[in-house]
Length: 144
Ligand code: CA2
Image (cartoon, rainbow, N blue to C red; front, side, top):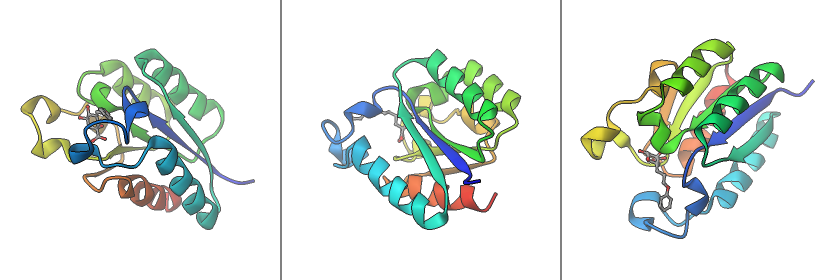
């Protein structure tokens, strides 16, 4: 059976490509999904690519990844990365490896972005590569 990788995106990432191109680039989330889908096909993976602005929905989707027997989750939790113990608890609960993904490198930005609750539960992080962060993370997920 084809292994599935969930690629979950948090708040405001639906605005990609429309605002703040100096930080986040010009690619839209749909562009990133198309690239991830093409690379996943080459790697023999299926992907479930989603975005929500709601913290609890991300928690529900992490649970769904476990129920679906997902191979891994790539998680760009956006601002919830830096605030959400609920996401950390979900990551620790599901028993599915989670790779933290970011377009920018939060460690080089404002101090409030330096703390990552997601990172406390993730098996790896890929950040600062723009849309390539998703592709590199997908390649890492394929090796898990
Ligand atoms: O670099 C990343 O991928 C982030 O997860 C993006 C988050 C930010 O809170 C994290 O610290 C790092 C913000 C996403 C906001 O996306 C926008 C897209 C277009 C215009 C405005 C915001």
